[in-house]
Structure formats: structure tokens, C-alpha cells
Amino acid sequence: MQARTICIADDDGFFMRIERIDDAQDLATLRGNMELGLSSVGPAEDVDGHRYVPDGADAEVELSLRAAGDGVSMVTLVVRIDGGRYRVTQHLPHREALEGIAPSFRAMLGSLRTTGPRPRS
Image (cartoon, rainbow, N blue to C red; front, side, top):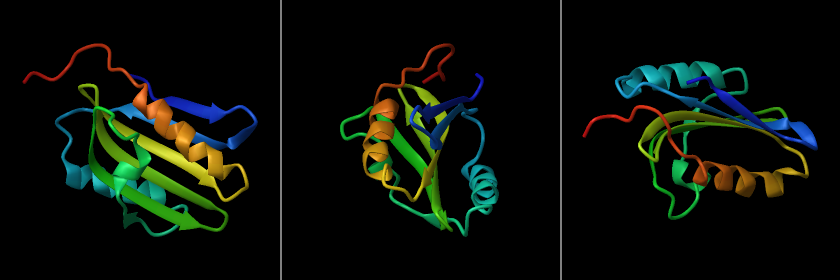
């Protein structure tokens, strides 16, 4: 699956990137890649990833990291949604619009549906 990037039309500084990832990738490798990606903003720290997905969603957060720097925060999650495994990156500039963006991103994740092959149970 190709990664999808969702931008907010009025301000393309806010965006969320969603990538379907292989179920076999181990969390230690994913963590290292996520820490490297976040290092351009600041040091990565563990956060409660459930605050980035909607309540009641069919979502299992496996890993969640956040970095904050000069005027921007980034959050990266590894989450299982609707039978698929995804890496979700949110780019959040520290601007006035931030207040309404996070709920919009949560709602978008709540509407995500997995198509194509699913892991065998």
C-alpha cells in the first residue's frame, strides 16, 4: 500500500501521513525508525497513543512517540485499525488552528478501513 498524506486545506502545515506496514516488522526496529524520523523535530518521548485515536474505535495502539521542537510537534504511532497495521505520523505546528486539528485527525483515523489482504488469525 502506498502511504497516504492528508493535509488540511486551509493550512498545509498540518498533515497526517498513514502508511500500512508489514505485520512482521518488530517493534524495536519500528521504534528506532520512528525515533530517527522524529529527531528532526526534537528528542522522542513515549506518550499515551490512545489520546490520538477516537474513543471506541477498533484500534490497538502498539507504540506511540512524540517530539516537540521550535514551533512544531510530531507524533508517530504504530496502530492496528480494522485488521491492518499502520504507522501514523501527525505534523502539528504550534499555531491557533491546532485546537481543532487534533479532533479532526482522530475522526479520520476512526473512519479508516482496511482493504486488501488481512493477517491470518
